[in-house]
Structures are given as structure tokens and as C-alpha cells.
Length: 308
Image (cartoon, rainbow, N blue to C red):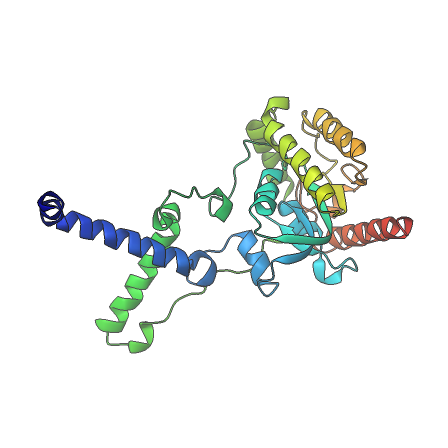
């Protein structure tokens, strides 16, 4: 009995520090400021929930920023929740469904563009499903705590040193809307973007999208088990630029799986003129997105009629 007591006395300071760390981690994780506080940056998944009253169920149009730019939810007759995530992939959708973060009802529409299936595609590290359970909250989001903490320190200084009490609680709310695409990118920048895409992704081969193919198989099985209608849209690509060399094989591989599972497909990959684009992969908001939204609505309506 004396040894445990002696151990506690000898290591009391370290144990108190450990207890304080664990308690603070639990409290900060429960607070979840990356979601609940406007002082902190919000990722596209959190923005989706925010703009839908934090609801976590409903029909969904999922994809990456190409879907965000192309599908105008408020003008759509399909009443789908636009869940375009910056750098979103099918592995992200699988995690969302597998972890029960969102319950899709009525139908799931998935938009696949030239980047959606690339395993090595950079992503937003703040998506909650990417955080390992063992990783401390503050460490996982350290860059954003540093940004907001620096602002809070300045406000505290102004409030106390400069005797301006209104500054104590003041802060600049972080941007809560998603990126939309207006007008047309300059030709020189478009050409540079094509060069960048080719350098970053043009070398992709079949093994570079195996995880997302596996995620697609999982999503098909999930929708089948939930009796959830699954539809897939191949998102438009600007025809003024060469289609990435990996796309024909990738599209054939994906379509073969979808055909076997009887999943309806709307192929818009090469059907839009350059005037509808902001850049290579994003339709502009003025005329590209309205046309896309109407086209998807008409297609989904035809599927609904044929299923009656």
C-alpha cells in the first residue's frame, strides 16, 4: 500500500499535468470550436450543415468543388442537399456514411469529375473523419488555433492595455460560404492550371485510384442494403483542354461497376462548350451552373417517372 502512495506523492506534479491535459482535451473536443465557433475556419462539410440548420439527414448531391460550383440547390426542383466538399473524394463519402455522420434519404446523387477518384489528391485536413482518435484536438487543428488564438490575444491586449472593453469579446467571424465561380478565368491562367494539373495528377494509373474504386463498391453495397437509389453524374470538363490521360480507363472501370449494379449514369464529361466554364473543371455561376442544374433536374425527373 505504501508503494502506490509513495508513487503518487513522487509523481504528483506529472500526474496533475496529465490529468489537466486529458480534462482540457475532453472539454475542447466537446466544445468542438471548429464546428461551433465562428472564430474558427469552417470546412465545406461544416458549411453544408450550417446552411441547412445543422440537419444531418436528407437527399444529397455529393461531390467535390465541381458539384458546389455546378449545382444551384435553391434553383433546383430536385431538393437535393448540395454536399460538394473541397477536394472531396469517394473515400470521404464512405467515411461519412460508415461513421453515421449523415443519413442520406430518398436518393444519393454522386458527381464524379477528373479528380474525385484520385487517392493521392490533396484534401482538407480539418474533415473530422480524417482525424485519428488518438490525436489531440488542439494538435490536429493547430494551424487554426494559432490563427484564432493570435486574433484573441490582440483583442485581449486592446481590451486591457488600451482600455477598450468592447474589444475583449470582439472577433472577425470566419467566412461561412462555399467557393463559387463567376466569370471566366484568364486564358493564361487557364493554361497554367492545365500545366499544374498535368504535373500533379497526369501520371495517375489504375493503382492510384484503387482506394476510391473500393469506396465506390462499398457505396453501391451500402445503397443497396439501405434501398437507397444511387445515381452518378460525370461532371463536365472544359473541352478546350485535353482530357487527362487516365480518364478513359478510369471512366470505363467506374461505368462497368455501375452497369453491373444497375446504377443510372448521366455522362456530361464532354458535353459542355467552353463558354459555360470558369476554368477547367468548374462551371461558371452565370450560365454554366443554371444549365447543369436544369439538366440534372430533368434527368432525375425522368428516372422518377420510369420507376413508377
